[in-house]
Length: 496
Ligand code: BGP
Image 1: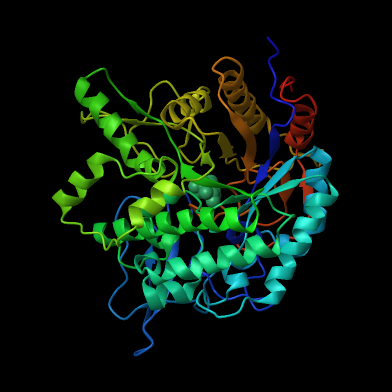
Image 2: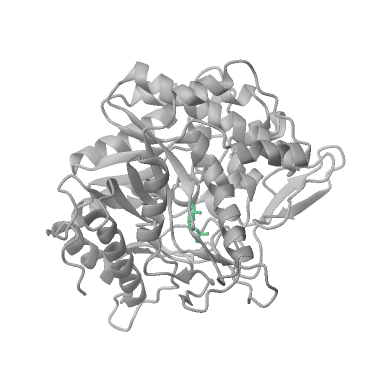
């Protein structure tokens, strides 16, 4: 058996505008929800700053994936003097895109995942006309990709909603936001016809449940708002699939799910059930967006919580008629759960859980699981039988420049060796239809969870620190040359 990947396998890297692009107020861009988030650290939460326009009082709420985040009465998220907001500069892709895409070309990328910043195209989200300068920027980027034979994979909404939509409409809780989004999606798909073939509608759509402001510009963190916000995003996704078919049948639209397989800590059936129910909570979002229907358990859950969806005639038919073409997901790690009180708690991407005694962690507490991709791919394939795409995987490391002026990122290479071998087995031994792999943060960028620069993922180092200092100069790490070899051998050669 040939142990490599199919010839058309899409190798590449992934980024997001709010973490990478910078130029937050250039060329007509409006503010997004990401632009009012300060930096934090592994132990200190990021802050979303606000002002009360009536009194001038200022303050903040802490970004949290575990506890509800609510803004005080009359508070409006805002940029405040004296605060540092990492999205404002990111790692300045806006002014380095030619250099960065050239580096991607050198590594042999077949695909580059990036997001379009909605507020660069529609600065307030509800504008009548798009911002031409914003449209032009991405056109230049996509043409640059094509120069190197790189296929763009575009996320339409990656953790940034135009701030005006959050303030005026309470984000995705309002059905009118569906029309604004679909208008934005149509504008983009028409403009980039022939340049962009792959779109993702919402980054990590299930994150709306853990962090509704981050994922959906929702300022009221309660069960009703989150359920309604998700329903509206599902409808927007279905309408985007419908529009894509009309605009260009070549376009493929995918879902993007944050996926972390959940393991039970013990063989106690109660632990097994807890793991199953936790997975159901995540898979609810793909049951609807990929599978086309609400699962039965969610109606019981909504009833028990007193949630009433403001649904309309035809909603469920639309969801059934226009599911996505493929299911993409992020997967960094697994998590572990137990009903017993003796598990040591763990930190992680979105789900905390307890520490898995079999696995080591990185400096931010994320478990390093050599089998996670094969397990995730099998679970998702068995449930949906739709093409899959790993659009985020990687490891955050505080890389240092060595005495020889280079970056010897052994830890990253070793993590990727295990993970790529694991997905290779899923393709070769389990027969899973996997479209591609885009390593997260291929050029160093700001961390979404902590807002730090020191939590680096890239094959290319960017000179910038947590206080916003640095030349922004690019420097390929050892993993840059390693990944180039992996791509050239179609995943057959993973050696150092
Ligand atoms: C995912 C997000 C990304 C990215 C990644 C790594 O949840 O889609 O935007 O940042 O996680 O997380 P972090 O940056 O917190 O290390």
